[in-house]
Length: 349
Image (cartoon, rainbow, N blue to C red):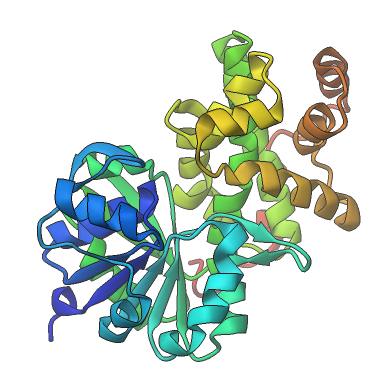
């Protein structure tokens, strides 16, 4: 059996799960997209389109759309998880035995509390026999679905699994790069959602290009500072899963977290902003978790603190901005000293 003949299941019928499954089908990979809702599945089969989450994108006729979880998993060797973080563990608890021995690739960008756990760590807890990887990068679903050129990162220490994922996903419009820093790649994918909310707010307020650039650059410094403190490789944040994902999420109106921030910047409440979106914006939950973890760990994160103060502490925006602009002016690139005194590992060279 060639890598392209490896059967795949994608769990989750939202915009990214649908995009991923359709891309796999376009590549000639036998793939089943699992959805919880039979009515939605039937409509997608009949119309050849996910009208709710991905309107206007035609689905490959070879794509199997099903609500039969057992059948989808039994046939699959690789399983991509595109499930909201709030339901992630509960779904795995239901299907864990069916994932044993399979390659399980998480695409969900969130953090679970208590424990400050990445999604792949939850997979390890619930399915210890699984081969685990994560997929992350500058991957707006609609652009990927339309065939726009992009790239992503598969992160795992299982080199054979990495090669398999590259084989089934790589195509003319998508390059799949490998990383062994699974924790760093996953952490970058979760953290950038918080800064996308800040960027959306700034855009709604009509700030200048200099200000937007400053926000994104300082966001990168802040998220890298935190990630390195938590054990991630700082070089990961110079790649697609770090600065790449941060740029696209902080500049595109297609980003769900950016949309929430934009609505907040226009004066809507958090509840109104989320209701208007109609989809999960992981950054809101991540903000709560990240703010508490930064306090517990003693990591300086002024942008996270400022956004938390605005959204959850009802502090005036002008006061928060004033504190941010009067904070101590520290180093621009903080990790030059870190890299200078830290020998590169064999994997980093």
